[in-house]
Amino acid sequence: MVNETLSHPFLLQAGDLNVDDISLIFEKARFYLQKFEKDTKKLEDLKGVTVALAFFEPSTRTRLSFELAAKRLSADVFTFSSSTSSLTKGESLLDTLKTIEAMGVHMFVIRHSCSGVPNFLQQNTTGIVINAGDGKHEHPTQALLDAFTLHRYFGDIKGLNVCIVGDILHSRVARSNIVLLNTLGANLGLFSPGTLLPPKIESWNTRIFNDINDAIKWSNVVIVLRLQNERMESGLIPSVREFSKYFGVTYEIYSKKPELVLLHPGPVNYGIELEYTVSNYPNVLIQTQVTHGVYIRMALLSLLAKNLS
Ligand code: CP
Image (cartoon, rainbow, N blue to C red; front, side, top):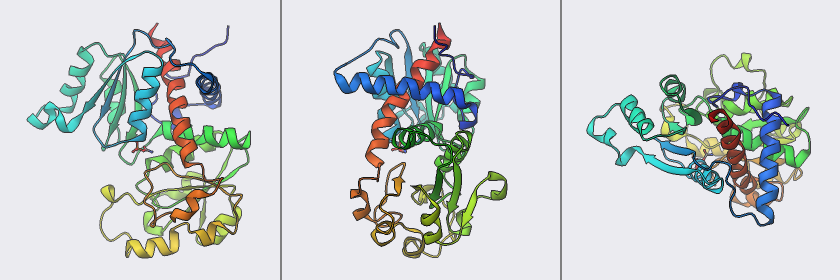
């Protein structure tokens, strides 16, 4: 029998996954993708499992794809939304999480604006916690679906040159991608205003570019990120227009190397980090990333649920 056990019974950060874990998740995601591309409507892999989607921050892709993933595997799913909860009446975060747990929840998918909340919850529950994005810290399932997209496109990630472009300082996607793609043997580059690079960047095992043309020339893949205004302190960039002019990916830049693969975790702010015309290129895989997100999350839920039996 194939060993389908991940090395940790939770997913809090990309560093929780080794190469074997990632291969197992990819294999399972490919299995579900092939099954559902044919005609399967529903499987029973999570029958009897209750999944809580605890979102304390807005989300479209992550929340809906986790919901669809859990439902396709026959889990019982419910969504918690902070703005309509008793948090507004003064209930604490821990009491809120304990209340949800008391309803018989087995798995928590959690998004929060504070870094470390998923780790805090894992320390206070016997359930399985999946980090769906915590503050500026990590977004490991986004990194998994990004890597799965590259794996399906290129066949192998080892040796690929991947440059992350944009607001890296505030990006949990950048942090998770750097860790996960490093684990898989990719070379990482960063192109960003100096004020939007994290401190101690030299310890990240990445190459820093100062010119977009050099970055594009070096890259097989660019991952473009939006400006995270909701996390941004003032004064980090002179203006959005100036950021767009020097750090945005335009048709003029992209058309010089149309074989370049472009990813964006979404939501995209067209006209700022990415010119809309670029989105029509066949190597711009933004919608493929969204599709893969469902299968990666099905794979992850089903593999982690093996710790329940
Ligand atoms: N990529 C991502 O996390 O998108 P959402 O905020 O829409 O979930």
